[in-house]
Image 1 (cartoon, rainbow, N blue to C red):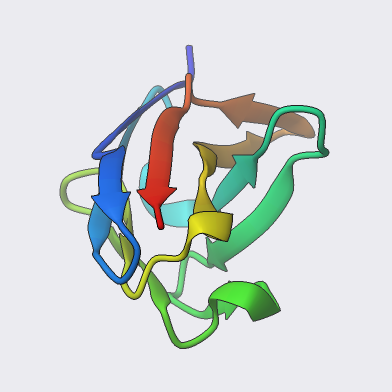
Image 2 (cartoon, one colour):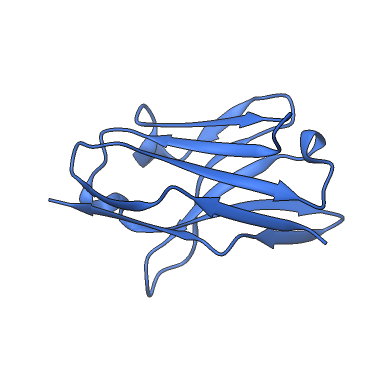
Length: 115
């Protein structure tokens, strides 16, 4: 059974930083790409960042230069370091992976950036 558990969200002032963490179980973590999504109520879930099994990364344009995705295969964890946060980064952030054609999601962690 695949399980993803996020942590690290919270309330921060604009310009501040947060580090999200996601621990995975039930998968061979090191071979799977990992992704962070975010969702604002009433809007579609948005892909924020992704990292391949080899460590290659991609980011959506609004977070480039501010967010960094990384992974620790020994600990089955993926991280999202978020710097220079803006109020428009406020959302629920979800960890995601896929296996055998199925998508798996964590429960999400709320990030709120005050102006």
